[in-house]
Structures are given as structure tokens and as C-alpha cells.
Figure 1 (cartoon, rainbow, N blue to C red):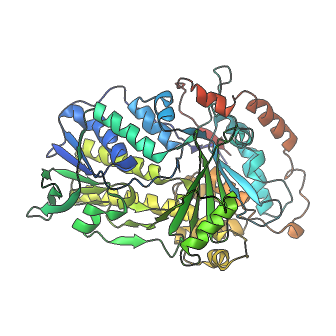
Figure 2 (tube, one colour):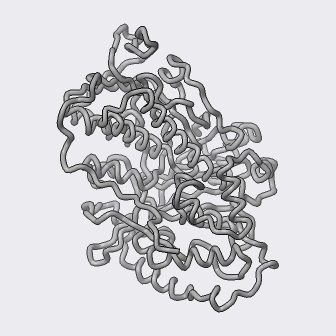
Length: 535
């Protein structure tokens, strides 16, 4: 095969705010709902349109709580702040944020040697180990006994194990792309402050209703306080309530409950220790999984589970037992989740963003990614003046495909599990409600054939790069059983993993301690676009 780009997390923001006239027919945008969805969207739209005379107003209820119990992100959040010129040293302390090198999955697989694995974020240094990883994985899928666990091949894994920050000095020019952990409530408050500084208007009120024009589009929203706010475009960031996209426009909903069983969560904080990890930990429990997210102020913990298999009281008891808090009077917070998406993310003159648009359980921390990509793509359509019915169809197809690609990746965690201790896990592994694309990907893998071409072209495994799929399938041990493996040939066993261990050990020594770095966050390096490659 030829060398090909594996993934590109980079975002190159424009050097200055756009100029020129506002999009035709767009002078007022009203965003209903605040929180991270509302204020992220406000900042993205403000970046493109406030300087061009578009008024952007956020209507936020003071009585609706933000759904946030400590949150994680993908590396795309870094691009969001870069595009706004906001430094980590400004927003991270305000949000009690930490760096995130990836996710450890504990107990999802019972296959010997594969009971735990780490899903890393990409690094420029991975260029030196990616071909070895892909070769060994494909060789093992084909029945040869070679080491193929992902944890030995990536620098981000070693940084997470050693609690090192993914911030190398200038003398070691290998950038590690990273996500973040943060307090979602504090992040929303920070984003609100920045949005107001950049000209976004804010009204504290409770939206109760909408009025319509003669074409069936929303003309205005009405508040409990008796005020009316008219606009050309409306953005629904009202969470699961879906005040505009659901209650006003009655947009149909596509449930993912047949693919993903979890619909509830319970959360409990615990104190953070002397050393602060730079990874999310996802531990499989009896009826779902527990998250552990490190902030500078505490650990955010929770249990995502299926109410069809477990009651709320049972889930809380299991989480308390998992955390050693059975005798604690620390109150728990219970949440319900609606997993799925709307059929039309952009319906008439209303855009749904955040939980009103859709939700996939937080296993891969994609909630902010959906917000960011939806708002950014919508802004690009507005920039082009692409506002007609055909544009809406293209936009909605893009967003739906994005949701379904992420869904398929998360479904794979459950489908490939080998636990048999509860009916919950047995039902997940036996679930046949899979997309056609996912069936094709599984068929290729189980028959010892490469999935590289299909994933690279994004006709299979949409939304995730090849190395993520290989890390998942290999990390879960989806290989022939050990007794069926044969001795490898010299060509199959051509890579010396001791050399990879030595490379990663020496490389990791260049990265600083995570907690110390958080105490004095360095300026953002202006590195070139991050690229990672494989053969």
C-alpha cells in the first residue's frame, strides 16, 4: 500500500474576522438556551457574522439547570479555541480543566491479555510506530501469534500511564494532539463571558412558545415574562426539551435504542489525589459502565446504564460500591438520556444544536464535537448564502451521517464485549441491530481482510480514522483464539517490539508532569498541521 493520511486534527483559523455584507435575509439570529451548546454556537456564529451587522441574541432560562457532571472532549475542542484565539492558559483554569491523552477501557473484554486497553489520540510520533501496529494487527487477524495489543505502540498511552502532560518542549518537536476534561458548568460560564465580550446579546428569560409566519417558519419566540423576540434564524439549544425543533416544529425523532441500550446515568464526585491523571477511565460494570474524569478540583464519576436491566437505586448502589462510598452521605445526581437524533437538524429556519439535536451516550465524549461541527458547518453554509431547501437537505444528510458513524463506533464496543456475567452484556453481544456498513466492516475483519481502504475512504467506519478502529478491535482482542494461532513466519514477526518500547520510553521522558504543567500552562505552540500516517 502507499502512504496515506490517517487523520488530520488541525484547524487553521482565519487571520481576521470575515468582512463584507451579511448573508441575504439574515439580520437577526436568536439562540434559545445557553450552556455549552448555546454559548459555543453563539461564539462560532459571532466569529463570522457580528462584524457584518448580524445581531445574535441568546435567551437563557435562569431556572433550567445545565446538564454537566464533569465532561471530556475529543481533540477537536482544541480547534474550537484556536479558531477564537483563546489560549489554554485562559480557559482551562477557569473550567478546572485537565489534559486528556485518551480513554482506558477496563473490563469490557474477558479475553486473556485483552482485559484492558487504551484508545490514544494521534501524535506525530505515531508515524514511527503506526506501520508496525497495523502490520501486527493484520498478521494476528490472519492467525499468526504476534503481539498486537495497541498499548505498546502509541506515545499517548505511555504519557497517560506516567501522568505526563501532552505538551513537549520546543527541543522535542513531536506534538501530541489532545482532548480535555473540564467542569461543563464552569465552561459554559466562561463561554458566556467571552461571547458577551464579543458582542453577543444576552437575555435571562424563560421561552414558552413560538409564533409562525405564513410559510410555517418560526417568526418569533414568546417568553413567560411577556416579551417577544423575532428573528430570521433560530437555534434550538434547549436540551432534551427541544422547545423549537420538537415542540414547535414537531420534527420527527430517530431513536437509537435498538442499537444502544443505555438511557440513564448516576453521578458522584470524589476528591482528586496528589497526582492528576490525563486520561478518562471507562470501567465496565454489571449493567453499563462507569466513567472517571480527572479535574483539577475533583474526580467526576458516574455510571451509564440501561433502565431496562437495572433500577436507579440499584445503579447508585453499584456505583457507590465501585467508588468505596457505600457509607458516604455524598448525594448522587440521577440523569435520564434520550439516545438518537432528529430527522432534520435544520428544519425551516431553525437549527437544532446539542441535546435538542440528538445525543449518543458519552462513551467517546462526542457531545461537544457534535455541537462544534454542527455550528461550524452551519456557519459555512451561511457564509456561502446556501440557505435554500437543497442546502438544508445536504446539511441534514451530513449531520445524520455523522451521528450514525459515531453511533456505529460506539456500538462496536458493546458488540465485541465478551462478558457473560449479566443479561445486559449478553444482550449487547447478541444484538443484531447493526447498520449495513458495520456488518460489512465486521465481515471483512472476521475473514482476515483489511478494513483500511474502506475506512480511509470513509465508506466504512465513518467518523473515525483507521488507527481508532484498529485500536478498538485489537484492544478488545477480536482475534482468533490463542490455541488457534500459529507460529509466525520471519516476515510476519519482522518487528522488534523492544525497539518500540525503547523509542516510546525515551520519547516520553521529554514530556512534563501533568499536574505541574496544569499549575503553569505553557503558551500554545504554533506547530504545523498534525498528520499521522500508516502503510
